[in-house]
Length: 436
Image (cartoon, rainbow, N blue to C red):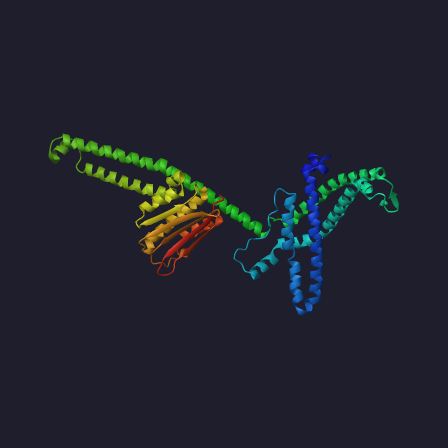
């Protein structure tokens, strides 16, 4: 309709008009075949229902909207730049009985059946009529050539009225051009009706469970992104605020200790000299103790900042961040990450914290003496595996660390799998798309 409004006079001679005719012709063939098959299945189902076989055929008729709707959505790509989404829920790993029960309970299944049985037949008949008009108009356009080729045979374009020669066929050419011109506009209007009804009946709706699940997934992804942004803000505040203040405090205490030592040394020898110089007994020890506690707090804060979001991950990527963690780990860690470059931010963050959680569990619970971290990008997916030679028997449901990571991976469309038989080894495998 946008193209028709933009070029109403030229539209029948544009590529958009050809796409409309191709869509109508394809839809007419698809609708005709569908109607014939459904009539045959319904007749057989009713005839054989007494022996039980017919019930399966009638069930096939009830589910016939599924393949017909899928084909119609694909056919719409001829005229629609934005594809019509599949309204059905994805059922990965479900068996046939579960799929069948779910599809029968979905409203989208019955909307597709209504489109196939009630909407498609009249639209198919209209498409066949316009296609016949197009073919007849094209025949009239070339009627002078036909008369010339078939001469001296008699040619009757109108029953009972012979066309004596090519010149007498020129009025039929004019009629054919008019038919093509009007047919181009009619094809655009009929295609628009097709598309709007298909979007209404074959696309997802807000009340569909699939649409609710999709919106829930999107909201979870937005919450995860907001949490990640907040975590980075906290990391920056700690790094630039509290950490720098502790550094300044440590330096101030160091200067105070240096000043106390100079006063104590300048007042003569022994403790009496220190007292005469105005340095209270034990003050230097207290300052040194405070300085040590400030250093310890600074180290703990640095570890906390690294745990929130390490700067090396932001600056240099996943491989460098994992290598840094491996160097600090109490158990020897072999790192083998062969990555093509920087990965999307959410993927790098999820993979990094998956590795750190696995390494933490290996050091605390497994009694492992060696850990291996391997990662590759295969077919657009990051495949990461952490393996330790510990005692095994790990239960991912026992803690919240791996469960939280599994939820984050699920938001990204990936999988997190843990294999830990008794006696070991324990293997944690991460698969996540790298599409961003």
